Figure 1: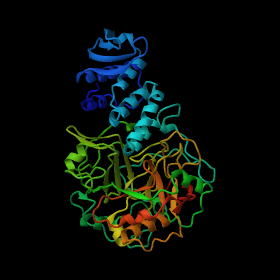
Figure 2: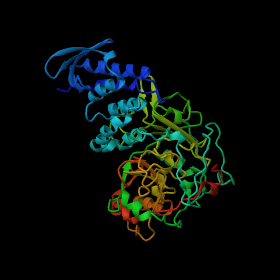
Figure 3: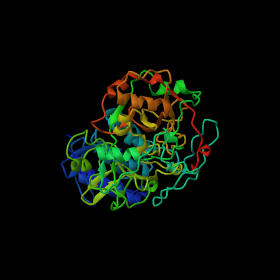
Figure 4: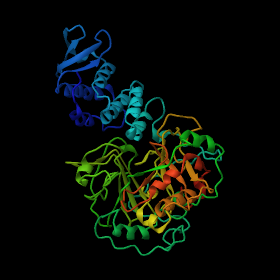
Length: 500
């Protein structure tokens, strides 16, 4: 009989915050402790190699375990009788089938022990059982096997066949830089819309308010020359476009997630420390201007008090903090508030006044290494009738490659017939969107002019929209399907001012 073991997750979490490879001496004791914590809730069954076989773990201590074998006999099993691989196998057998968080944490330990391949099929089954957690699972699966760690990964080739340049430096979180050519701060954005003065911000402002609308209408999110703001309506079609679109799903309807909320903070917002865990080595260091009312991905559409959502729940749990006065952006992956303060798996800081990207090989709050905030369809722009930037889109399968401005991949698939991270998709010019409701049409028009970046692994053809109840009529987007889109050639970084 299996026992409920949800209460074990904190114990496993404490074991898995180190990202650098560890020795068996460092990693075996946490696995032992995980097993001991498990059997405190009652006997549980797992598998050991011959001659032990299937056993029922009855109790344990620092010396070893008391197990019951299949013939009913009890055995005092010393830890010294088990190799690291045996202890891992025993611990893995104690995980519940649908326990996403537990599987991922044990998988990270397995990878550090060099046993990731043995966890691969379990994670693959988990993907099928828990499709809502696909992005998290695929990030961990991409670390399994002989591939080099992401920071050392070679960037994908550009459409012209030349390699992307490497060696970008992390953004300077203290200075908002202007892009080369002085195209930032002119008062007119890439749409030719005159930007009003930025309103004074005295306290944190949530995204779904009239106060936020006024601030956002005055913001220049990245320079007009930035890829997010680039008019790609005339770009050439990628030679492998039809095959790549087919791999995503030519007959699948377009959808959206009302998921990516954010908070706008004043320039004097107090900065706090955030504990960085899984991807700390690819994170920008704090402290960060994290307010108490920072929304977590999906809120308020998911229901419930914000404080409860900040602390509980699964998924990617993105947290986005925007400082408009300093043109700074802070994005967190797997953000969670605890009694000890905030923690996150990763944090990516960037200046919205620059065209510089993250260092090649670095992830961000999105698997592609891209920022999320510039891609979110917001109420203020939908209400004006035009989303003024590229969107982000998720797909089921990506390949082990990235195209600038992306900087990271999360796949082991090397097929050129599936999209790379950062692949740019465009709604075909001849698709009629004129009869769509105002907000849906504003998004569809952006798909034609600015396109969409492949940003993460997940359900196919899902874009991100702010979880703002004022945004309406999006069901009309479901009239669009994959075959209405095409893959386009992208502009290389050397043609973008200030990109290097």
